[in-house]
Image (cartoon, rainbow, N blue to C red):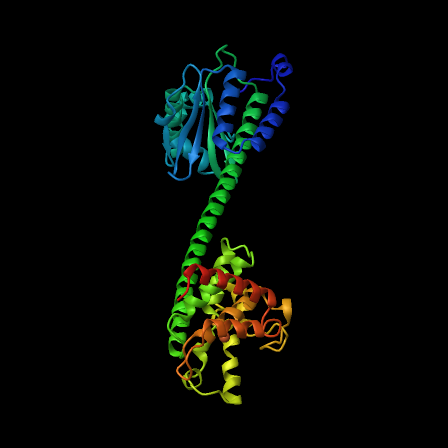
Length: 414
Ligand SMILES: [Fe+2]
């Protein structure tokens, strides 16, 4: 039972200020266990109790556990666990009819007074039985006052307070202070739990996104490999010599290097993919046109030209290859603007497409076709040089020829 406010004590202790401090700590401390420790230590020091403990709901295990215990009568925290059907938990969390008291706290002295009455001992209602068990629990735990804390209708915890060492009782102002404190702590714990669950959800989301990204990359890689095989297949169908794809790639990289293009990381991968896949659209060109040894008719030529759009369309699922699609679309554009499909001119044509145009043509000239033998390297160089500034970008031609010359010098006379 609380006593009247002690004016002397009230002067020494500013409850409002302490509650404001607690509120500030709640905002500052993101981990609820630290806040609860802080509260227990504060009560222990400020009120000088034989025992200060916090019983807190462990939602995962569905029971209440001691998270802190301080004072001369403290108990090992891991040992005290109350199931949901424990009378003390049921008393505070169960029905709203807290007979015989209507208050949101319990004093051991009040229970003792009640249970010592003859009519109480004769009573058979369940609340009487419950109170006897609560009294026993409080005596075992050496606590004098129980103050519950709620969040909405859920009992989040119980503040368990022992006797004052100096023997003085609690004032009603102090009990109100404990009630507010218990309420604020419940709010803080719930908010921290909610924040933590948001953090956990975010981590889980990030992990899933990573997994999706990993799978997407894997799928893209597989798709790319299939496209690469297709590209090789197409050239195998054409009357080119074997190895056109890898040769065009090699010559293209060599030219880009000579031009001083940064070939680290993604740039290299994109150029390599474009060099390999530039004619992948030919998969959609009928064999009788693709393999025709004679000159194509006007109509057949129009069909053949569609391989650039077809190639770009085939690569649409490779979302990382947007640039490769642009290059493929432009690999038959001419430097003078007379190419197809859009008639782009000069630097409007992606540099990679200008490189492909040169090295693909060069390799086509020197390769054997069934309707005519491959021509010599000198003849091919001559033709490339002749078309510089018209079909080809002169800068690309210069770099290509320089790189080729270096390579031929390295190989020596054949
Ligand atoms: Fe082509």
